[in-house]
Image (cartoon, rainbow over all chains, first blue to last red; front, side, top):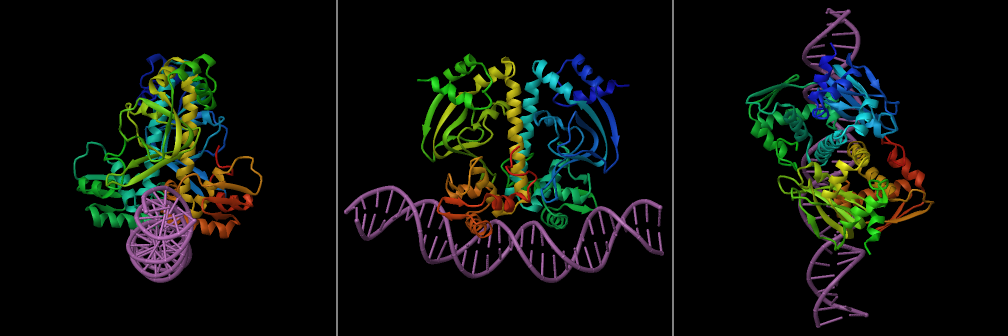
Length: 236
Length: 236
DNA sequence: CGAGGGTTTGAAGTGCATCAAATAGTGTGG
DNA sequence: CCACACTATTTGATGCACTTCAAACCCTCG
């Protein structure tokens, strides 16, 4: 029954090179949980004992400003790990987490991670390269805020949503509501709405509700990625 | 002669808990270098064999967009380490580095770092917590771009420049030219100039050339940090 | 069918960027 | 020590992008 927990773990780069028995031992301490949209997992500064891997659905990470507004740190799809950095924040979460779309999560005790960081050769190295990847992605995100216009950021997001070896025309669905998407991209919902229209005019894509059709990837790429410090596909 | 290299190393959190002999062994492989403003250390994608610690002066990290513009990743003061993440980027630098103000740097072979990551118990953990701190700082920076206005970002930068236990009135000097500062804060030089004027009107500070006088830290803090997800002082 | 959230559209305002030009500041050679 | 050249910074005028406020529209679900 619990065996497939290890499959989920091994699918993540962080655990991919651990020995079978080590993954199994972590797997034993994990739990699979299902939550409905809107459920709050934890708040910023809460004492932390669990990290999570998103198995399906979407999870929103957020912080609140001093004057009460919500800032979206990130919105995570399946395959992503979060909460693990509490280890380096005095065992409290550095941001809040809420289910953005119905999700199943695998919880992993922080204690298990800590133990492997300290005692399993090579694991800390994997954590390091994982942290480095995260940092690169975040740096790219920060760049976008300075360099790209709102429509470009939207297009860039669509490109990241498209599967790697997709053949045109690509059809995809916006994975969560547009209010959240706008916040994730650092803009107002109205700006998102207008940005999508601008994109349609500029790059031949069509949008109906949450359905996006991209007949010409090259045109979209050219529109968005010319202002960027990375070539498409924009991860590295 | 080379003994004080170890002092520089030990001043950095990364090496602070290594044993004396281990630090000395790294110290032997280091070199102290002086560069004039404008000197290019390396370019993005260059093969990397050295990391650096800024001993004095300022170093600018940058990337170029596809269409040739320069994006400022960060501008580092004394005490900061850079270039080390090449380890996780296939031994090539993820951004260019140039001397922003006359600087002396301590170069550290990446090979030495790698070796300690792999063979020195506890070192990888230190790298991890270092990476985590960096990530937090970067996340805060990214937030600022979305949440804060240009004058608020400027004020926030001034607050970070002020020594921790400073008593009013605080006097400080902008450490590098305003064109670079504007880029570092993600705005145009004209916006910086006008933002400084706005700040003067709003928070009682005075600016003459590169000299800034802050008679009332509370007022500046209130102006800037109310829109932020962290209380002053805004690191954690 | 009506209520309510999510989304779009419209109109007006604001902040930052852009272009252009003036001014201050810095270093050089006479 | 001054005149000149050159760069850094400020100021002014204007335009554009994004925000804000307001209202309409759409869609789903009771």
